[in-house]
Image 1 (tube, rainbow, N blue to C red):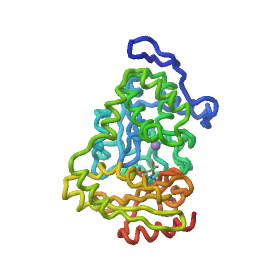
Image 2: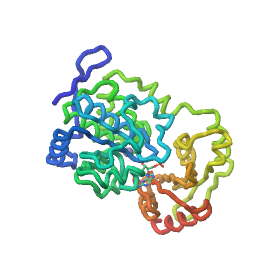
Image 3: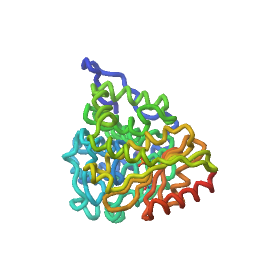
Image 4: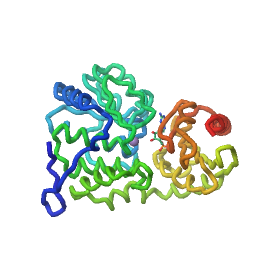
Length: 350
Ligand code: 5GP
Ligand code: MN
C-alpha cells in the first residue's frame, strides 16, 4: 500500500513508510485492527482530555482516512467543557468532532489515541468501558494496555508515528490535511525536533509529511509563536512568584497560576501549555513544576526533568503518569499541600 505523496511541484515523492523492523507492534495486531475497522460501519475515535497536538492530530488524521473509506466517524475528547484549545484550531477536520454528550454510549468500535490510562479519557471513559472493541494507539511507556487491542510503541516519539502507520495500512492517501494533523503531533511531542526522542525515523516521517506541501512556518506560528496579550500578564505573575529550591534531586523550580489570575486577563486554561517550557530552562534545577488551576478548581500539574529524575515515576505515585522527562497528574489539594506531596515523592526517586 504505497500512499500517493507528491512534492510541492506535484511530482510523486519517494515514500518509505513505517518505523522499520524495530516496531514492537506485531503484524497480527495491525491485521486485527484492520479487520475490526473493515467490519465496522461506525468508528468512534477519542483522545485524552485537554488534547495536545499529538492527541488531537493523531485522532483527526485517522478520522480523515476512515471517512474517505466510507465509514461513519465520530471523534471527541472527554472534557466537561468541550472546546478545542485555541492553538489547535488551525487543524483541519474539526467538523468530525462531536461533544462527549453526542458520543455513542456503547460504540461498536472505539479507537483511543495518546491516552496511557482509562482516566485520561475523562467523560469518555464510560463510553470506552461500554465499547465492544477498544483499540489503544499510544506511545507512553506507562501504558499497560487497557483495551481489547493494543497498538503501543513506547519507543515512538509521538502517537502520530503510529497514526501514520495506521493511515498507510488502511490504504489511505497522505494528503495535506492528514499530513498537517500528523505533523502537529510530531512537532508537539518532539518539542519541534529538539527532544532526545528525535530519531532519524522522526525526520524521515517529517520529510514525508512536508512533501505534501504543508506550511511548516504557519504551523509553527500557530503552535508556539502567538498568544493573546493576557498571556504576557499571566506569565509575568507566574514568573514573579517562581521559586528555586535546593533539594535531593539537584534543584526544583516551580510556580503556579490560579484561575483567578487567568480570569483577570480573560485567559483560557489551554493557553498555559507553554509555560512549563519557560520555567524548565532554569540551569540550577533538575526538575520543573507548574501548577495550573483549571476551570473546575483542580490543579493540573505539569512536570519536567532534565533526565536524571524519572518524573513519570513521581507522577505515577501521585495518580498520573507520562514520560521519563515529561509527566503530569491532577491534584485536589492546595498549592502548598500539592508541593509538599510532590517533594515527598521526589525524594523517594532521587
Ligand atoms: P503536560 O505537562 O504537557 O500537560 O504533560 C506532559 C506529559 O505528561 C503528557 O505527555 C502526558 O503523557 C503526561 N500527563 C500529563 N497529565 C497527566 C495525567 O493527569 N495523567 C497521566 N497519566 N499522564 C499525564
Ligand atoms: Mn503523545
